[in-house]
Image (cartoon, rainbow, N blue to C red):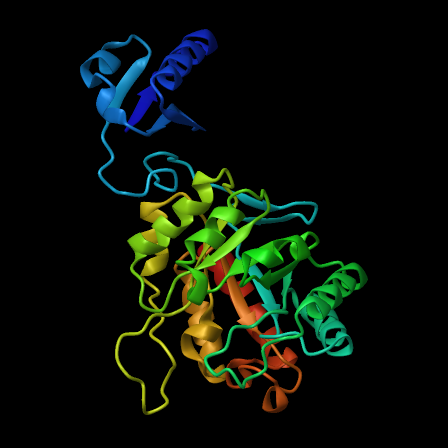
Length: 338
């Protein structure tokens, strides 16, 4: 349920109403919009007399929200949420298109530092590198673990870019103190215990859509994080399974329509990962441009200096030169359309 307050509502009137609603056992989510203040009510709203609430002099309207996701719902928060990466000047959801780039997995300090310098020069705003990497095969390279996180931290200081890395286990949270954005992969999207723990943090969480999950399920996973108190959530579309691409055309189907759909359903910023969506390097740039053109708040692109010898996902990685060319086209698309 939401209550939209009138523009002439005083602070005392608003505070009195909020206090009364909390006394009814409700969690009150306050959204200060450009024109109205919206109170989102979460809990057993059945005990609230809707007609009484509607009759109050400061209340303009009362609406029942039928969707199961509440706090991430745009009805709760009409204006776009802007997620700041603290201390970096990077913002998701402010109208810009943030480009995240880096290797699928951290292979070593020299490798990551060399690549990070080139990515920064080409316009990357966030450096990505995974230290823990869940793989389909138990025999594949699983990452460097804590050593990888330590390498990421040192490269961050050397290059001056904020960093992002994937988390796979609640026991690892303490290791991510110096990681600016924590990534939840598609495999972990419905790891609800992990989502609950991430809700206790206040740093940005990038939440990827599962390969077989609906948009509603993605938003319900985001709700777990926000319900814990962490509102710094970035949604990520990374391709879904539709039919078998056994001919090698692409790994998944990139659901580009999810960007405007999620923007309509939720106030959270939405980015696109064309690398995992396609799994083919030659398809990354055109899909990145499509995502930029349809209003994505950012892009996540995998880059490797020697894709042929990458320890993970080399087939989808751009070389630094190809990334630089793609980044320039992305800037031109955004400049022309937004």
